[in-house]
Amino acid sequence: MGHGVTASDGVTYVPGELDRDATFYVAGHRGLVGSAIVRRLERAGFRRIVGKRSAELDLKNRDAVFAYMAEVKPKYIVLAAAKVGGILANSTYPVDFLSDNVRIQTNVLDAALNNDVERVAFLGSSCIYPKFAEQPIREESLLTGYLEPTNDAYAIAKIAGIMHTQAVRRQYGLPWISAMPTNLYGPNDNFSPKGSHVLPALVRRYDEAASIGAASVTNWGTGTPRREFLHADDMADAVLHLLEHYDGPEQVNVGSGHDVTIREVAETIAAVVGFEGETLWDTTKPDGTPQKLLDVSKLADAGWTSSISLEEGLERTVAWYRKHAGSLRG
Image (cartoon, rainbow, N blue to C red; front, side, top):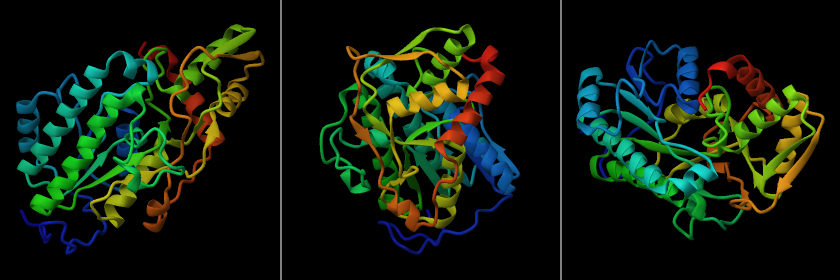
């Protein structure tokens, strides 16, 4: 397998502008991250972006994935497909999050290797890092401590994806990379009460409360954990930038480099949706990791920084949510 790359992580591959006429497969193209990547690729002038909805192609079906990859023969792939959810979903269905995600990424990566795909970006999550990793979290913190128990099964699956990508580099010399985003939000997010992450769950909760003039809203935990948030459009921009400017075996953190408390996020969302009631905190519910802030020095060294502020991103997200609220899942 060539592409001018030396096996065992040789350095002969030089990143550069991707071929806008080549077939570009975005796995998970309808989701939060995948749809943002499609929008970014379209703006960049890519003309052959392909993808299949899960109803059309079950990525857990190995034979179907191999057949599809052989048919479309992509030159580039972004693997953004995953089974995702918040603390409740991860705690309740750890088998599903481990099994489904390992199968999805193994099938896609193996099929990509079988078809000699030149450039692959595997997307993971910041939950791969130890629960009490030193803040801000550097890429080198991977596998240096215990994971957060509420989402350890999902984290292990994503760590397996990083290792898979690194193994392909070592064994076959292909310039595949992996990126680990912080907490993402934006259009096409999951806003369901039971399956969503914290920010979309708060958007829905406060918007519904504002619409009926509720006196109060009750959130999980203490509101003190600190979280970093990145708009999906920023994430998509970073992924394309990395594909064209970065090559290396180590995963790259993708974030804003700034964090806020959950209480501050809730207050900002309340203001954006126009909720004027009281916010209560159910301290019998878990907080999760006390802080998750990524060190984004490697990303900055590659020439990229985020440009969408949290307030601007929330205003965009609330506008999108209100426009599509009638057709959202759950």
